Every structure is written in C-alpha cells, then in structure tokens.
Length: 227
Image (cartoon, rainbow, N blue to C red):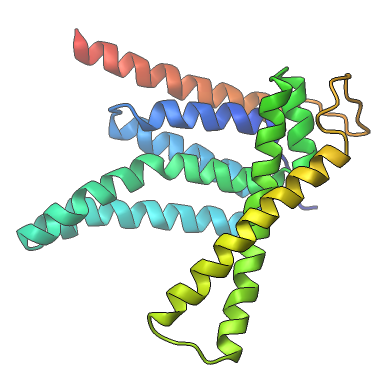
C-alpha cells in the first residue's frame, strides 16, 4: 500500500513564510541543509518522489559550484556567478514549498484556506485572480509559439512576434478573469460557504513543528553569534 500524504493550504502558507524568514538570514550550514532536507522529505512523502530527488541533486550541484568549481575558475567567472549561486541556495526552500503548493493545493482549497485565516476579502480576491492569471498567460504563450512554428519565424523576429500579442492578450485575460470572478460573487461581502472542509492532520502539525524548530534555531544561531 502506497503512503499518500498531502498538505493543508494553511500549512503551505506557514511553511512559505518560514522559508522566507530562514532564507534571508545568515544561517549555519547545518540549519540550511537540514531545512532543505526536511522540505525534500515532505515533497517525497507527498508522492512527488522524483521531484524531491531533483531538488536534492540541484542543491548538491549548487554546493559543488560554490565550494569547488567557482573557487578554481578564472576570477571574472567566479565574480560573475558567485552571487547568483548564493542567492539560488537561499531561495531554494521557497521554490521547493512553492512548487509543492502549486502541485498539491487546488485553487478552490487555497481560497478556503485563506478564508480560514481570516485574511481581508480584498486580498483574497487579488490573490485568487493572480493565481488564475499566470496559467492563462502560459497557455496563451504556448499558442503563440505554435503559431510561430507554423509560420516558420526564427531569430530576433520571434521576440516581437511573441511580446506584442502576449501584451495584448495579457490585458484581455486580466479583464476576463476579473469579470469571471465578479460574476461568481467573489466580491460579495456576505460570509462565504463551501463544500470543501479543511482539517489540519498529523502530517501538517509535524511539518509546522519542524518549520518552527528550524526558524527558532536560525534566530538562536544569530543571537549566539552576536554575543
């Protein structure tokens, strides 16, 4: 029997916030690697096993670049790529939990989770329209690429042929999504009901606890370094 776990939207939001807090602190290697390993394990147990392995390999590649390849490279290459690699390591936890949320949490459950957190309705409307916006733009971009292949467009002309219709399409898509959201009553100020019920499970509490543990450890390392 295959173990299949999923995360609650509130767990994903909390872990994303904690990942941002941890990412922009000067953490010891043990905290950074431990936090990334925990997120990879969480991704693994949500049955995205190949994705978890890819994240681990990606982190090892970044470590190899930063500690072995760039120090032995010509100075202009090391200078150009050191900052890029450092920031890639810092935002890696945010990417891991962000991708897991996109794959695990449908928009309807995510909106219910935001309502459970009692966020302002205006903010929920903005977030829900934004989340629907990017997949629509990606789909439109695919259609434009297919049209360019049919017309055999190459080189720099592809930039113009992609950007102009994409900008025009982005404007109309934003208006259509806003109109669709308003039609479905997303701006109605009365209390919303939903057939979706959210309940924090043991897996959610464990992951939240691990996230808080690493956040506290990050602050403790800073204080110990300061004193």
